[in-house]
Every structure is written in structure tokens, then in C-alpha cells.
Image (cartoon, rainbow, N blue to C red; front, side):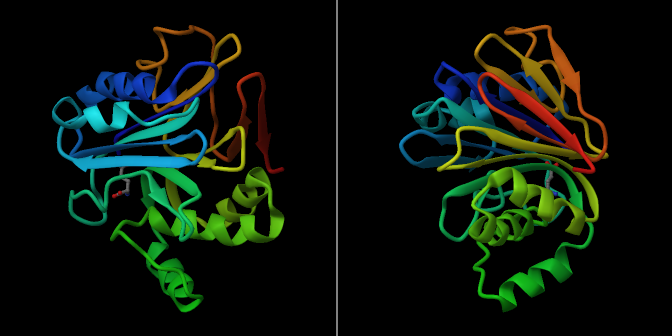
Length: 223
Ligand code: GLU
């Protein structure tokens, strides 16, 4: 398990997320990546060290973004297995710390229903499950609330979609904190990347799912 950082607010997200991921380097990692929501969803991810490869991630545009440093559990460290992972249409992105224990069965079912997988990770099943629910519900929070009960294992998740001005976050057995700013909010696996901007924070509990916009945080548990 490694690190995650998310941002929504008035600044460009990518430079803030890259700096935040560097502050999580002490946890160790084998690859990293960032996705932002600007006019479209933009993605940049690499095997290796942030300090050697961050130039292209810094150029991503948008004031909503999620980033990840990976410690591989399922699939070798390479560019394709690095997070964020996208759905088939490339409009929803997910980062994940933890392990999805029932991913193999979920992957078989999703493949049979026509989804195309681009990585060997356990994580990628999550974004395809969200894609299916989002297709009918057209609401990212409702889609994540429908998917989380299907996941067995540990997760801290950050999810964004190109049609939504918010991040959805969820936690089970993997740490996740929301930092409260002024017209901006943060999410991360620990306070280290957030402390520069705010000391106000909420530590999520197992089963929590939150909707995080620039001005509002709403936390749900059991609906
Ligand atoms: N299990 C996921 C993977 O192997 C996430 C690993 C992590 O927490 O960094 O990609």
C-alpha cells in the first residue's frame, strides 16, 4: 500500500498533486500517476521515480485531480499497471491503495460483459464497475455507493469523472483523510501532503463514502 493525493479548488491541481506525492515518497513506491479534470480528463503515469518523470504530469490541466504512488501487489511495476486507471470510455479515473481480494471473479464477469482491461491490477475492476453503474445512474456518488458493497478487501479510493465537479472518496481498512481548505479541499492517505495548506482535517472511518467539492464535503456511511 502506498500513497494517494487528491485536490479540488481554485488552483491548478497537477503541480500541487506532484508535490504532494513527493512528500509521500518516504513510504516507498515503484510507479506513480496523475489524472486531472479540465476541459477533458487528462492522464499521465509512469514506472519509476517522480523526480525523474514528473515534467509531463506537471503539464496536465484542471482544478480537480487525483494522484497515486504505487507499491505493486497485482501486476508488475510498469506504465500500464500504474494508477490512475480509466474506464473503457476514458472519462472516469480511479486511484486505489489496498487490495481487492475478489478481483479475479469480478474481472471475469466484467470481461464477459464486454469491458476491455488495460492493466493486470486488481484495482481496474473498480473503475469498470463504476462505469456500469454511472451509465444508468448518471451520478458518480450513487455509482460508487452501488459498487463499494461488491468489493472485498482493503481500499482507500479517489474517483473523478469528466462530467462531475467533485471527487468521490471511499475507505475500508486503508487510511484516508480529507483536508478542509478555504474554497478548496484535499484528500490523501496521510496528512503529510496536506499540512502545507490546512490543519483542518477529517479522518475517514471504514465504510465512509464522501462527496468532496471545492466548497462542501458530505460523508455517508451505510447511505
Ligand atoms: N493493489 C493495487 C495495485 O497493485 C494498489 C497497490 C497500492 O496500494 O499501491 O495496483
